[in-house]
Image (cartoon, rainbow, N blue to C red; front, side):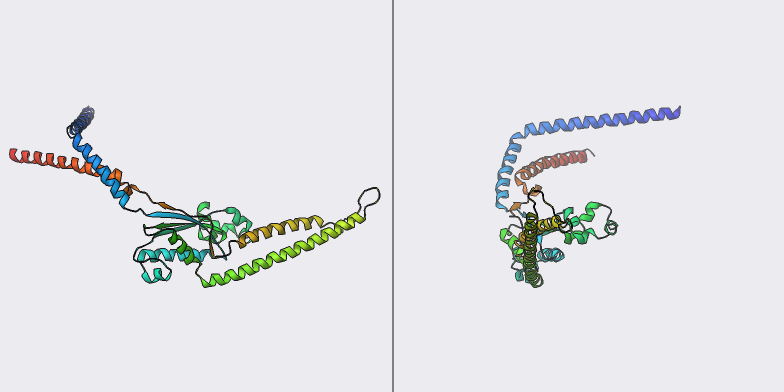
Amino acid sequence: MTENNTDEIDLAFVGKQIKKLYHSFLVWCYRGVQFVIKHWIALAAICLTGIVVGHFWQNSVEPNNSSTLIIQTNFKSTNYVYESLSLLRDKSIQGDSAFLVKNNFKYEDREILGIAIEPVVNILEILENPRSYNRNLNEFLAQTDFVDDLLLSEVFFNEYKYHRLVIYTTPYGNESTLKKVIEYLNNNKLYNDTKVIAIKDTKAKIAANKKTIDLIDGILENSAKAIKGSEPESGQITFNAQNYTNLADLVDGKTDLLEENEDLNRELLKYNNVVQLVNTPSTVPITSLKHKKRLLLPIVLIFLYCFFFFIKEMFTKARRLAVES
């Protein structure tokens, strides 16, 4: 019985406290409304002043920018590109003047805030590559818990042609900064020498494919003449199946060679550089809450104005309690 009485007392006490808090909230809202009514002219003037000052302040400060570049890494240079960009980012943050000047970047007025790069994932590139397809994928899967992590891991970096490069720049950075980043990546003697060899080999492969195509055309032409010469007067065609079994394979082989040459010629257009820029990047301002001064400044000024009266009321109440004591 005593326990029931105690529970009822506790519930009654909690109910009174909730009711007290609710009344305090109503009083606080009432005082807030009264304060706004009493000071609305001052609050409106402060808000308008904050908007105007914030507008001019925001326009006087140039924002940081970001640019997204789609690049193709040629001649198996993916690891080199990733390491070089990491080095450039670190040197820019450190302000290494010797390194920056050597690579035509500004060091007094910092240009680069950050660099991020990731592959443009295309699983078809992995599956179409015989070297990747014949690997033990179970071994790769054991290195990660998720397929997405695997596809974005360093295991497959070299298998992707295209990569998304995001460069964050200060107001001192512009489109010329992006060009300097690409020039910095392309300024590597080893890969430039590799480029010459790769272009020569690609052109030789195209020429060899053309020669093979010509041979196939010759065989098909001779076969067509032989078939035409074997036509009887009735118009029916008879031929030795053993001699012409591979004609369909030759046609398929010619088609494959034509498609391969088309791909090789398309790749040659991108072989001018170790890192080839694929898209036309544009610079986009980075906007965040701290850049919205037209909104923030009025809020801050109104808060300071209200906080002043709050402190004043607290001080008055403390002085009255001190006198009473």
